[in-house]
Length: 205
Ligand code: ADP
Ligand code: 5GP
Image (cartoon, rainbow, N blue to C red):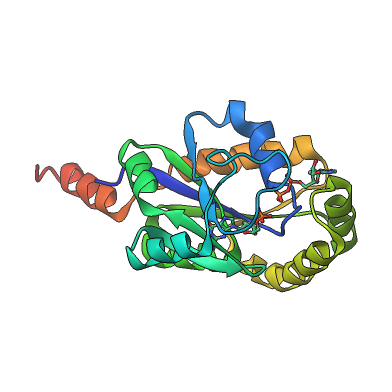
């Protein structure tokens, strides 16, 4: 039986998703952060199995064929995907499972697990600020930054599909909002749990 809940975080690359999760980590209780698999090259400082599982295109496509992904999408010309097995295990253990995935991934998770999903879109206050942060992060070259900015312009249009918006101006304030959203996300009940509750409430069990 599904006991856990899902919290999807999306937002342009450079919006501050990792920064906010790290800032809030101590206050959101036990959670499982879903480590995605990607075909993009590791950035400096990134470790296989920590930020992502870095694989070749061929390996990724084998996993697709084997049905190993809960969802996957192509973002900025690379594959990114969420492996089903660890997510299922974390949900069965009753954990809050946090995803950092794009708007396509959010739609796919909603289609499969809408009843236990809460979502938040994280963005800097303006496109200009996003560009400044991507440049200050110094992890991507000009061409990659241009592509990420273009992608951000398209992604922002999906903001209305999310339960919450977090405008990441001040990190501490954004982290506080994230903690509130994570607490609410944990309280979501699956349809199965609701049905069980109703039966018990009616005294049928
Ligand atoms: P994401 O995980 O969404 O790609 P990051 O967490 O890596 O984004 O943040 C992108 C860059 O912006 C990082 O260099 C981070 O230190 C910086 N950053 C994050 N939040 C803020 C903020 N509120 N004000 C200024 N810089 C920020
Ligand atoms: P980055 O290359 O900056 O780490 O991530 C680029 C984009 O890919 C971000 O919008 C991030 O949310 C998204 N992403 C990361 N992992 C996944 C995943 O497993 N599935 C999907 N659909 N998107 C992902």
